[in-house]
Image (cartoon, rainbow, N blue to C red; front, top):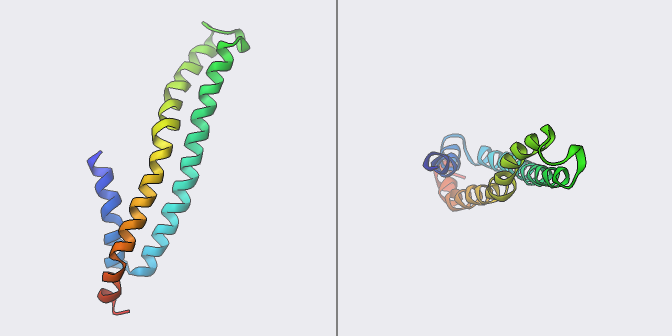
Amino acid sequence: MILPGVIAVITPVLVGFIAGPKMLAGTLIGVTASGVVLAIFMSNAGGAWDNAKKMIEGGASQGKGSEAHKASVVGDTVGDPFKDTAGPSLNILIKLMAIISLVIAPMLKNFWGL
């Protein structure tokens, strides 16, 4: 988990100093747009898999012990981390990259002579 954190911290700094403030703004727009969509997808998909398992356990699709139930248990195993950890953690990633960009923005102004 150290490498993804380092990538999230280093990316805005490298993009800002190597390519300039305009590309940094584009990077933040891309990170925000794709991160929000992915977070919403993960949260909703995880909830859907969890609800599907509960519905099958309630008697739909031949109930407990069926092939559908076995598949829903596997889906719920993936869905729980999606809705509980992976989806919400993308919010932290987006905020971290935005804050780092705002902190280095005055340095970029001087570095690029703007």
